[in-house]
Image (cartoon, rainbow, N blue to C red; front, top):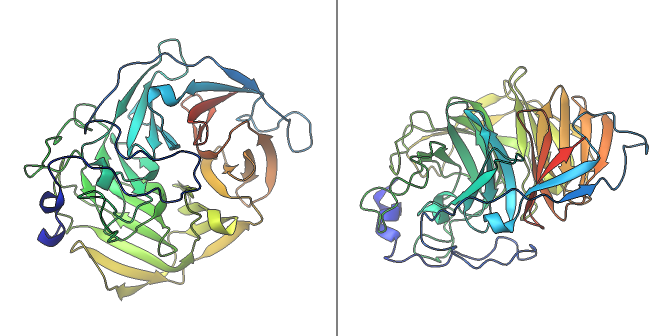
Length: 392
């Protein structure tokens, strides 16, 4: 990070409240901070509430998609620290951990053995989360006990609040519980800015993210309306600031539309290289061939000293149109599952965009969805601040 932009020079001695809600129409009200930096909370018991499915499948008959079911089991609530929860991901390196990402706390709630009688939870908020995880919209895990997050932020904080400067983009984090929100929590920073492992800054208002391989990820750039590939390469270690080895590639003619406060999640099919995108503002599902396109050379405006170039002419197709605010996305067993924020439904499509099945949910504001280790479907309800498992 350049000296002019270093957080070390900008942070004050106390944690001030963050900037305004990116979209004031959200059902939750931001109160800024959520306690002292790096706070954690104790264990909580699983919630036992269930709700029957309001409808059956697309034709009113039994569902044909095995992930769809008739019962919705609430396993997490605001009592656990959920605060406008917008995404959820199981950690592949520790399948008994379900991580949830909370917009208005700028942090996470981790569930251990979720949905079982042994369930516990812990809230963690990095001391520097109001920059590195500010208004977190989405997350994607690697197989190496790390993950990256996208932030729906224009960098309104630092000295809290400040005028947005658009110094914002995806951040890389450790999922090691001895490091995440534990290392580098001194405030002021003393040279170590929290526990993040890396960050690049070309995508303010980032709405979705998908893992490719190593430290490479794809991001939905909500401010500029493009898809961008980020490769952090070698991370700088917890709390560092050297981002100069990063590689950033902007797909300048792959157009996506942000709808404020509703993430547009993405999934990469590693077998084919196809990136599936919930283009929320345009109400459609896209498929991008990540092996296509021609690099057009260096782009202006790099903040990090990284390699920053453009790509044009990539093969991108519209698979589905007419969706009502598509948000969550999961790829499983040759099917795409998409949550419609506008209706509360989850829809199953084949990989050519043909609708297979549809399931109504009781969610107030459904967003991220994921498939658990047992093949079951889970979703985040930002309106009710609930994590829900779909049971057969």
